[in-house]
Length: 329
Image (cartoon, rainbow, N blue to C red):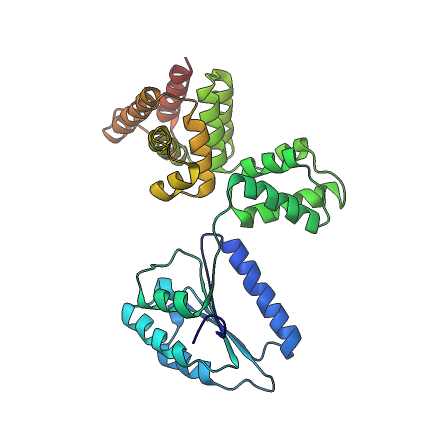
């Protein structure tokens, strides 16, 4: 079997929204062409029975020309021996069966089944979007939903929400509902209706710190806490972000691009691009000093120097605010 005459398809990658949308489109079109969903079978990888699956692949379609079989996240949830068995089974797939494997996590490319699918299946990798692609995606989706948004506002929305297409999709619907169809979505409305993601707020805080904007930094931090985010989660996200910035700064100084930084640090392209841009606002020594101060707070907390309870986190809150003021100073 070759890719050209294969009826096997393999979709995988970090962009789970686009994978889900594509599978829905396939199912809808199959129902239209083949008269309903009687010949569509969707199996979750966690519950897939190897023998039963093999039998189903050979089953003749009912009152139609084709059957559509979709196996979700099998590579991520199956044993090595089971994958080897499936790799053999699909070699003799009948022409009437359209088989689709989907993976919402990056599969192990060393496995027998991945190598088999790469060889005989029509494969498509759904990569996470870069910041520029994310803005274009918002522009396209808003237009398709009969809304209107200009590029600066689309870029601002992308920065507010981040690369989560599921959330962005909901936020676009919310904004169009508020403005009405074919009416421009203003930046002010985005600020009023959209709660920035935790990662987005951490990026804003870092920008404010880099600009030595003490008041702006404290305002972003206060907004984060007032939005209901747990203080410990915010603190450890700040530590994590500055750790990434140190690594991104080093790699950028040695000729690394945002794409190579994303690969080496195993970060989302959006995070890598933002870290690449932000790292230029600091010297390596400054980043090391900031990270060292954050670790001192962390150590003090873990050794009892900073005391917090479920109901009282004031000591840690004051330490983080002091850190922000001193860093901006």
